[in-house]
Length: 145
Image 1 (cartoon, rainbow, N blue to C red):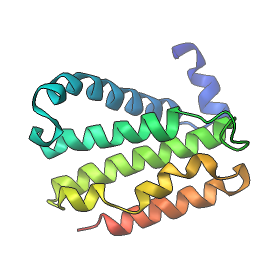
Image 2: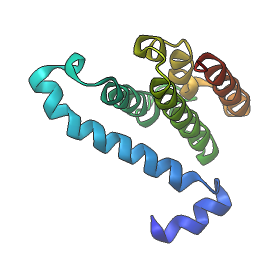
Image 3: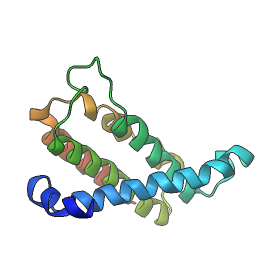
């Protein structure tokens, strides 16, 4: 990734690698928590760690997995991938801040915007920027204390 850093900064977005690194960190944290989850279940974890599991699930299922038979989801441009990842990381950051501000965990993980994030892979390229912006504005509003 170090060798491609300049290319990503010039051709995708200056913060693309930072977003990628946050996503990788969340997925690594999820992997570390899985042993604990198998022993005691996810409900026994602190809410902060349960939030990590929630975001990692979004990354795995809604960002990393593609459906080859869906004409929109089968292939995505780097721009679309970046915008999707940016939206997921935005959710993660806002959700963590809301949790720290004592917003109830159930409210955070029950947000309707999570379904919108899950559907981003089916949004056509021409509409993705607008849709991501709408989701982030809605998250900002709904995660404010």
